[in-house]
Length: 212
Image (cartoon, rainbow, N blue to C red; front, side, top):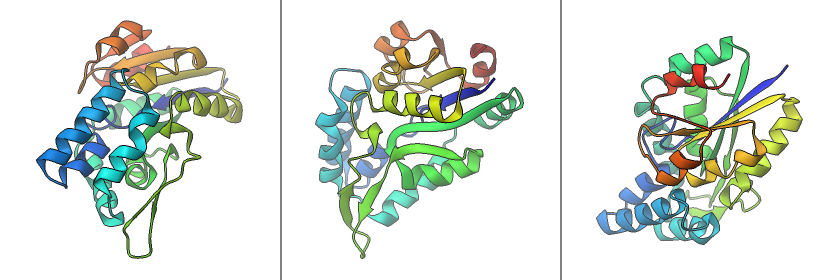
């Protein structure tokens, strides 16, 4: 029996929202605009497609800035994450990160956590490191993209039990394609997620007892 645990990254494994941190580098006005768009999507009012390219076009992140977010993820790791993941691995769970965040920032954080598989969005850069768009084929940049990933990974790992954990509307959307959807509220408690999740936790050390 193969058990697969899919974890959101931002505001779940780390207290950060990576895109908001990139916005912060551009000053308070840009940060506020980006944060408002992120919240609108995470709370479930705005489709991901409506904001994904827009936020990046406003920020124009550089390759170096994106890589700096990776170190910030590690510095802001959820305090119980490392121990909880060790316990879940010992119980036979395969763990993957499924995120609408950016692969190049999440990869160092995933390595720190010992997570081999990352499904996120790849950003593109010009030779000088300036922003050149993103890979629009990455499913998690659009509505119900995490559902696509959940179905694909279930088949790939031949998983008999699949659990999704996250704080946002894009995580809740995955509910029909997994066996259990666990809402996460340590950093952001979103009413729609709290109401719709099969279970709701506020620390990752509650996860081993929640996933069954």
